[in-house]
Image (cartoon, rainbow over all chains, first blue to last red; front, side, top):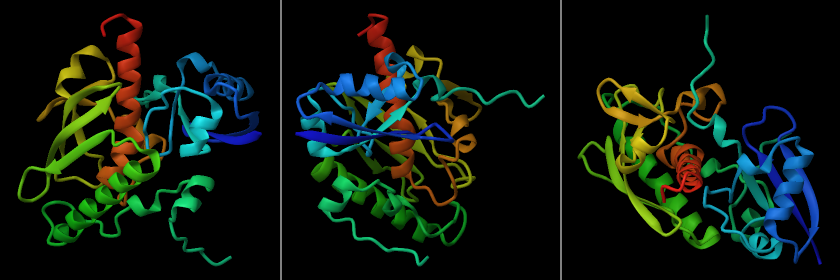
Length: 87
Length: 167
């Protein structure tokens, strides 16, 4: 059975969401890489969590979707980064 | 279009986008103002709702925190990630809620550069990007701060440490 996952890139101002329809048995990591590619990002440096901020341990898409089909994604390189110079 | 007021029943939260509107506070008051009592009560309420959400829907309570000063401007507790837990300390300054809370996870502060040296509090988690990205406003609560900042910070710092072989 196919499952629709919604990846929300919360640090993106425009086009923040990627919706993917993937088979239930697919590994979550694979789906994550697909979503990141579609967004033009490198999945290796991105962090995916459930909407409440709980980490996603891995497993299949079916297992992840049991808790939530919305996935929040952030680019950790911007977490805690200094603001751009105002000069 | 009229604003839809939605019940956050289990089925709804699983399918719809989360707005986490229930983690916002209605009162905007700083710790020195008389209305702070209301704001503090709202903070506690929002935190309880968030804990409930994590317990029943995500089944992962990754933090436990409680106020440790009578005015509820200082909070301490634990955060959990990958089977380990660390102490966390939150301080609400007088400028709160115009500025996000100051947060420290003392054991992790020296392993990352995602921090700022606060003149009065020492090293704390860097939150300068929060306002820039509209992740913080006067109505945001401690619960939202934990969700939007601490959860990601913790995960990226732990991932960094693992990548470097420090854990």
